[in-house]
Image 1 (cartoon, rainbow, N blue to C red):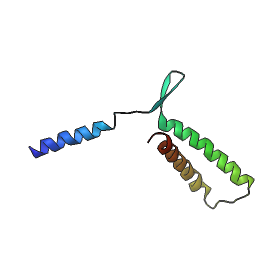
Image 2: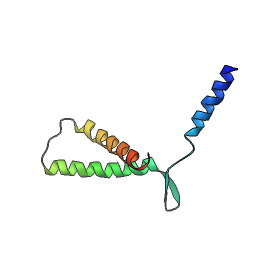
Image 3: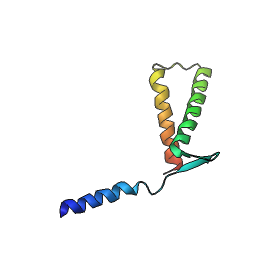
Image 4: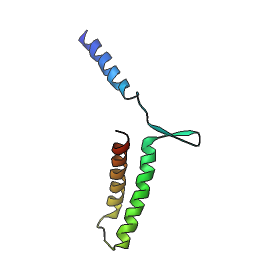
Length: 83
């Protein structure tokens, strides 16, 4: 009895995330919002790279820093616009 109730409860919790799906309509195609945030983050990371090169600030591990910066900006944009 308890196992059945807990199974129904777990199923209800897993379906709760499907209630709201933020998407953007781009020329008739629906794109998920995280993809738009990722594209904006890549553009912002390129701008930060240009700024760092312009200011002549050397980076120790650019292979680690740029993807991490892209992920950070993606998550920040997602949290700012789609809480």
